[in-house]
Image 1 (cartoon, helix red, strand yellow):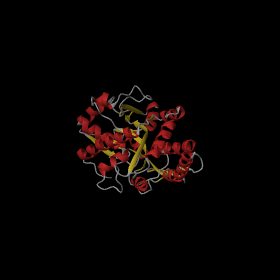
Image 2: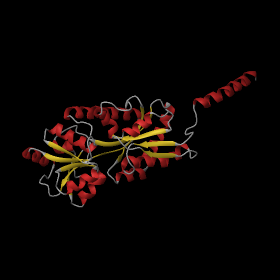
Image 3: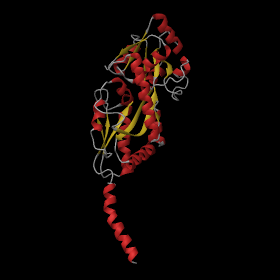
Image 4: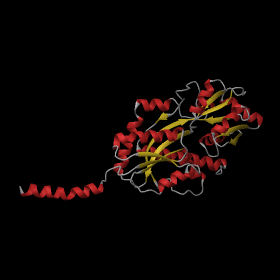
Length: 323
């Protein structure tokens, strides 16, 4: 009896310490920071999480999306790096997270040290598109066109955007003279492409496919590792140009501040994977040619590290400078 009582007293004494060691989450508002303006895939993914997390973590405190655009997503990313490591400020970021370390000599954060990977959210390759009247009927034809004419003008959504990096990777691997023509976003670039003022552009499926289906553009290749189910007739760049290993994917993932407790990172990972696995969520992204792609925390960290390595090499080889 005395033993039982002593055991109960010991457990009672441990209770408050255990509770203090594992505080309830969330204990206040949770901010999901996105380093781009509202609209687009990153913002859509963040708002999906903000709407669905209360199902997993309770509705006592809200989950809100904070758009902090600017400086190639550095403003939003740096903001998260300065926050406490308690899970109450999360980051949804994309390809610039992996491109920026190789592009900028000095960042206001350390990509490897300041962030804990949670999971990849979504990803998509880009379609290489040309005006319907362009003489190139396939990727081999576009590369031949560039070699015969001493160059082909390829538009992008801006310096060091994924459309630019996909172009530079193709130029590097194929040796074809492809000239970068940067615009301030894909919106301003598209009229130039449709008007034949540039020869080609790499673009996201959600923008490219409607114009391809209308017959105003032609899709020559897809930059993913496999053909896009929304346009299975379009070969990958690797297939069309005989460039095995060519891969350029636009991706968006979720990070917390480095030092966030492992148990909480695990809960965030499990909740996010559950949300992304729902049939309606998969279908919603698939309509835009985007794939939901959750993975383990370890695999996601490895994926981002490889993306950083690839793009740093392209930046060095092609002499890309910050825009």
